[in-house]
Image (cartoon, rainbow over all chains, first blue to last red):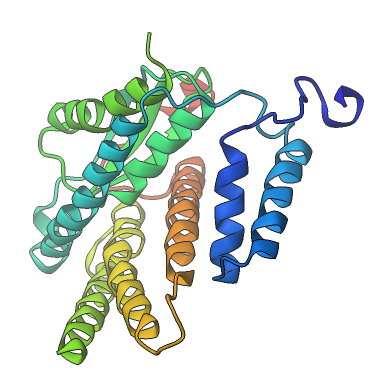
Length: 170
Length: 108
């Protein structure tokens, strides 16, 4: 196995990816027919094997409940922050205080950092612009941040802390 | 009753998408403009997708869950394009309202 698919290729290199891919397949087909379930599970088994080089590290979710709560918080923030950005755009763009912020990262894993950058981009008002080569800092552009440190503290406490709890508990 | 709910969702979605596009005109440098279309649209498209899901689920052909996938793909891909655009803009040193960090020194 390892000759074809790279190191760490067992029968199930990514146990979490299999059910996710299978459910995406079922959603694509919008059906729960037994044949589709079998095909979905088959794809969920084979695709992780062929994409193993792309996802070398094993992903473990240590606290599923914390992940669910995090998703809820993010959804709520998307709605609230959308309204905030809409108000900023309709208000007076001249009085905005855009800023570049260097957010120091406590996360280490690729997936966790990726998710954090993704969430920062999804919640309006902030775009993640660049990850430093040593992965210690994430550069974030904020639309209106009169107090940059407060924004950094919010990002760290509201998004990074739960992600760390879910993926990398010490 | 359902019609009113759907109309409300679609109008809200359209409104937020419009405000997002309006941001392109009203904001004044590349980095702040980036916020309008990538952001206000998440809620805009979200509202329309909920409306679409509710409407097609009530057509008598069973649940319609394709919208869940649209949301998923959108939420995965939209931030990546925003991130790449911001990164490219930093690299090209586009005019910015705030001084960008010193990129030469850090060898990004």
